[in-house]
Amino acid sequence: MPWSMTIGRFGGTAVRLHITFILFLAWIGLSALFRGGRAEALETVLFIVLIFTCVVLHEFGHIMMARHFGIQTSEVTLLPIGGVANLERIPDNPKQELMVALAGPSVNIVIGLGLILLGGVFVPDTLQHIDDPRLGLLARLAAANLFLAAFNLLPAFPMDGGRVLHALLVMKVGPQKAMQLAARIGQGFAFALGFLGLFGNPILIFIAIFVYIAAAGEAQESILRDTMKGLTVVDAMETRFATITVDTNLQHAVEVLLATPQHEFPVVDAQGKACGVLVREDLIIALRDRAPDSFVTDILRAPAQTLAANMPLEDALGVLSAANAPALSVVDTDGRLMGLLSRENISEMMMIKTMQPEWRFDRAA
Image: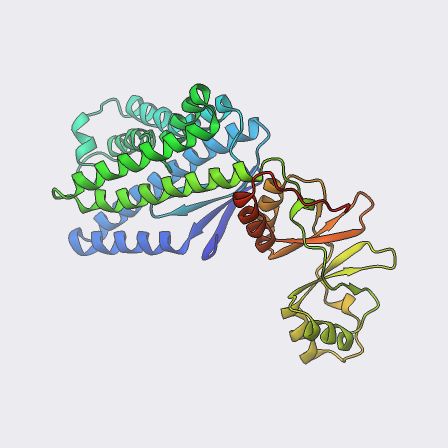
């Protein structure tokens, strides 16, 4: 995620802090400093850091359960509104989706109950006064974890309860209707929150807007995944594009750049195998520092990250997103270049399939 920094890596998953979280923490600390002095500011910042540590553990509950089902997670990012784990995909099996969704809140419940046992006392009223520094730190942290578990189990996306609801509905009515119902329930829940927020709690209105947008986004993403089913990379890839060979110099590469609308050029060897990618920005920078007869092999991005022609289109979109690349080369089983795939290609395919669900492009024709 842009504007975030990595603070550690655990089990192959990077933990990142978004700049807005740092600003949020500074704002909380300064507010406490002006309100109650240095001691209150330190305790308040410590409390917020501990809460977000529990949020990270919550996200790793999802991550570890997903990993149990063979689903990897590249990173988890801390935002002021909570943590976001970048799972490579949501389980297709509803029972697995249910278990992944419940794993996060379960971590908070275990932490909360553990702190209650450790502290020896828990006052239910603490839930209403979590921000009161006069209450014990363990009691406040226990209450915060129980609140996080309860809040995340609300039946609306993007909370875990939305995933739980979706998984249960899939078991009853199937995946397509389940997502529609889950999204409608989530949006209805958002309206209810917004209505309650009109009576003196503006934070509920903010949460309601966030929930409504997230529910609509989940529904749209589900439609996209359903449309992609059965499609592979070869169905959407671009086949008319310019390539550059490994023995090309910068002068010829510039001529190719000016002659085409491309910004990324696959670089191939004499056998037509992908060796890397020459990016427009790298070429422009090289013109300033290198002679025109320099070879492009000095500036190409290698090794080439490629896509298999028979890869499911949904998986290819995930690879594109993870690589943060506008386009990737498509190769056959021998590594020879067959085409290019970009987000634009996928968007065009989705538009075509929306208009003509049965349409298929015959590459052999």
